[in-house]
Length: 246
Ligand SMILES: CC(=O)[C@@H](O)[C@H](O)COP(=O)(O)O
Ligand SMILES: NCC(=O)COP(=O)(O)O
Image 1 (cartoon, helix red, strand yellow):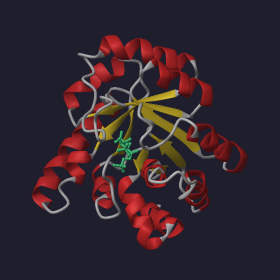
Image 2 (tube, rainbow, N blue to C red; image 1 turned 60 degrees about the vertical axis):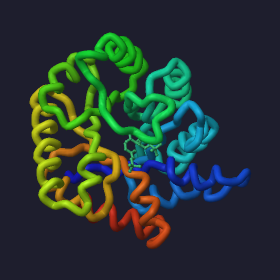
Image 3 (cartoon, rainbow, N blue to C red; image 1 turned 90 degrees about the vertical axis):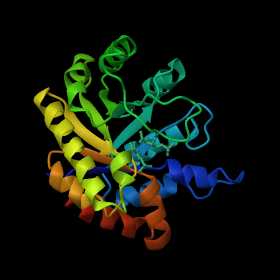
Image 4 (cartoon, protein in one colour; image 1 turned 180 degrees about the horizontal axis):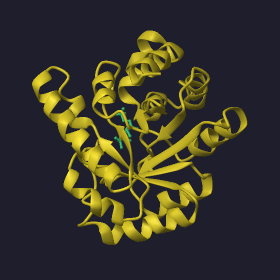
């Protein structure tokens, strides 16, 4: 089965937040995405709420529960107490932990699984006890996968930013794909399923799928939202599903 497509609505929220007005509607566009066949929605709340606001989270939960009960809600973020309480309150199907500093413009690296085991292990245990699937944001480093597994997580999410940045350099993109594929292989061998995300677009998805046919899920926001300005959200979802192999 091809990788499932989870639509990250952060960029839609950012556009909305330019004014004190309720459009573009995060849940409205989420509804169009799910109706067009996307498998889930992702949000990445940050402490300053510059993209998704904490108040968006219950609305997205209700959209999925009421209208798309087979879809999944994925909440990504740094595991502060506020973040953990947010996920415990709104019960996403998946929690993706990302080592972001609050001042970061966007996510730009994965966890140091061995070095940050002391932070990750109790958090993962708490989330697993709460019944959540837990995924950990990961650089393309195969050697880190046994330490990733030892945290107790279910999945890793491969950070594909460096691959996405190679849109004009095929040789460099091939080297990044090789590293991502080796990391996915090591993760699977360690018993972890593999997601991927960051700067994925229609043009770079087919090669990613070819190199990592075992990917469980991709979460895509920035490029997909840009595409939706041109093609409309429903048309964009059809383009992205096709690029994933559906
Ligand atoms: C972990 C990851 O790669 C995404 O969640 C990304 O951080 C999107 O967040 P922003 O839309 O806030 O950049
Ligand atoms: N986990 C990655 C994600 O949700 C979206 O990242 P991007 O497509 O906005 O770069």
